[in-house]
Image 1 (tube, rainbow, N blue to C red):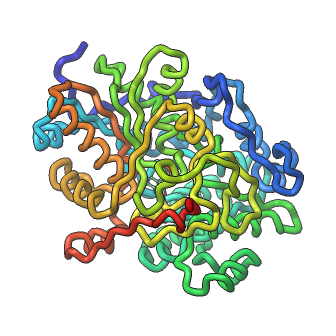
Image 2: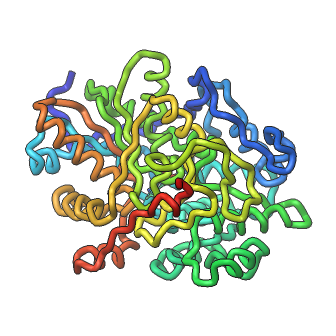
Length: 450
Ligand SMILES: Cc1ncc(COP(=O)(O)O)c(C=O)c1O
């Protein structure tokens, strides 16, 4: 075991994973399938292929292979910004005076500013390989849309992005970046789709939500008369967790290098993709009975799908045109308050993570946004990196875990996912620093619990 752990543990390019890890391949009890609401039966590959790229449908339905090879062009794209560093948070450990070791996997080291590029590269590559002419998508905070725009530019694939209205208005520069990479960006809900017009008629003042934006993007793809447009999604789906497993595989390789095993793994959870990716190899070991790390999902108290939602079939989108997934949900009609962690404002949760949570393989907690920003500012001042509001949920979770270790005198190894940077979130930081930030916690009625 190496005693002197460097601040940053980098892998060489030839140590990067060449296969994604499919958590479902390790699960004895699989998550329940996606349901086609018009038949009431599990979605078939052909039904899904009307909306998603063929190879991505195959990955979505693959519940048996433990690993799936990463095609070379995707690996080449990954090398533009990967491997990403695993950082030892010496400064934070000292400031907290904790006996715990704290590490974070930093995924913000690329222009899109987040982990979303890992799946964007894969999804655009498969769309191009299939000969499609364009893709549509939704974006919340804007990171996914930016990532998809970057991958679209790289693989020469036109991209149309429906951006949740509150983010579109709060983060104009974010859409400018997407425009630089050639994407067409529309504020959602919009009048360009039937779903958008319906939502606007019911809620004229809505600030939008991921669920609304998904409905619009899916409608545009599904109604292309030439069938050469497909919809791509930045989270929730099993295929996205699969692509994001590079995060966890790199993290494990870096920890192996310094002879460490995580006792606690913390990640923020919106639709569940970064957390599902970060925990992939560790959850695989847990499912095989080889290790037993505590895994903690952190979500906003304003959109508490795991901690207060119910585990049931629900639509993945507000417009109710997508398949239904068995997941923890607040109800597809739930429109979360304008919390600044736009990427965590989703009513549901990845079906894989939902199943693992239901099976008590992981836990979850929620925080109000002012506590999250307090942790974010502390982290920025001590560790130097300006974190995204979404990622700051994981920072807060890791800080609390480290303080718990201090109380109990435990020298645990804590790993958390620092999914992105917060350069486009200065309005939120400004609100926090000037004392104008408010916290909203929905009541039971709002989340459909009477
Ligand atoms: C920086 C960042 N972190 C986390 C998330 C949450 O998404 P997921 O739960 O799919 O990782 C987002 C989503 O937009 C994001 O932009």
